[in-house]
Amino acid sequence: MALVLFPVVVLVVLAAIVACVVFRIGVVRALGAAWRVISALPGARFDIEQGRTAVLVAIR
Image 1: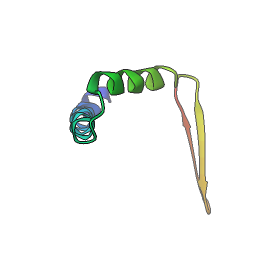
Image 2: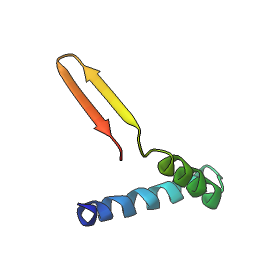
Image 3: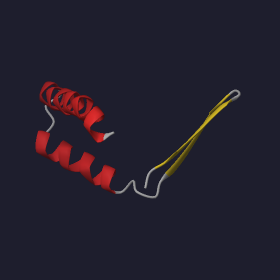
Image 4: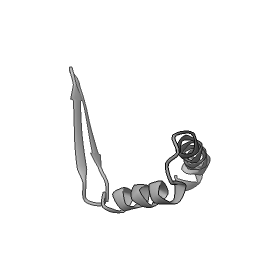
């Protein structure tokens, strides 16, 4: 699964770096902040409901 998502992750990181340069945000600080948010996610649960559709996302 991770191998399938790797190209998407690479594109997202490159887009984030370009956005940081455009908006004059420190790239290293922004990536560090993103890493801290991602590392705090294990154990999080997100319940999303819209109309008759419901999705539960649990991060382990």
